[in-house]
Length: 70
Image (tube, rainbow, N blue to C red; front, side):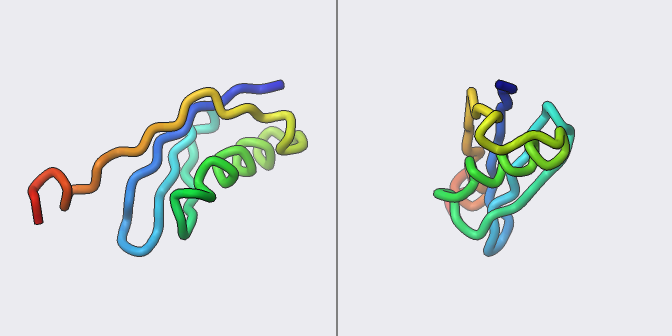
């Protein structure tokens, strides 16, 4: 098993998901699918099945709108 961490941030209609272990981004249309997209990204780059990738930590960054109150 390989462990990853991921951080999601809103970007318009999509969520950007950064996985530092592979130094790459992926995207998803919903926050609910973001963890699976992070695992799939790492699995594809490491050439392993996605069920061999464990998401150890998942964080959601607040959007700029929530910080400024817009």
